[in-house]
Length: 218
Image 1 (cartoon, rainbow, N blue to C red):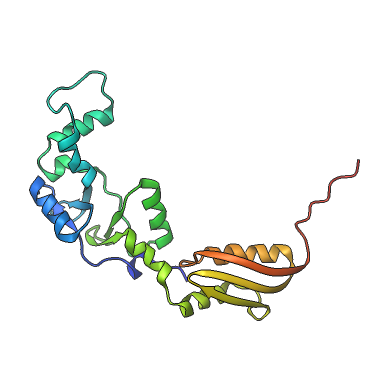
Image 2 (cartoon, rainbow, N blue to C red):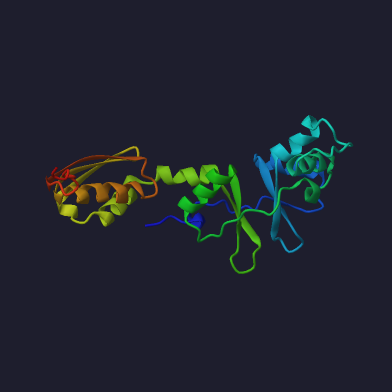
């Protein structure tokens, strides 16, 4: 069974309005102990995100009031952020969002690819923010009850009666016997794809190796 964002998300929408001050943003981060806040418009629709990195530019940007013709677009944007005092000036946009129905695995991939630690969750109809998904929420899938994990593993086995399962701290051990070696490999990949599985150990024997490559005769 696929775990969706709604199963693990935080129900608190950590956000500030576009005209929020630098101090308001810092206060919100401190209050909720987060490293970023979503910036929303008057209709509570995400338009960007302000992270701690964005705020730190106030301290580390060396040239706030001069612009070089040799600067890259990124450097100019960082200078603008360093001079900003409101959320709309400090934020990175557009905001990357997910919906309650997004698969947690997909959300985790977005976090990894974009190198972000949290995602605003929006209503798929109105586009308004309704919660926040943090990295720690995603990692909760690895603390699933063993019974739930075992049920999901059993569901992907072609012949559950022929395979025995042992689960220890998220590591699934499969043992038994199948007819073809390809069946054993397919089982491992199917189990590995289950949310909450840390790793898979396969001790399944096969009667025939259908993956053996026979070199051509010379």
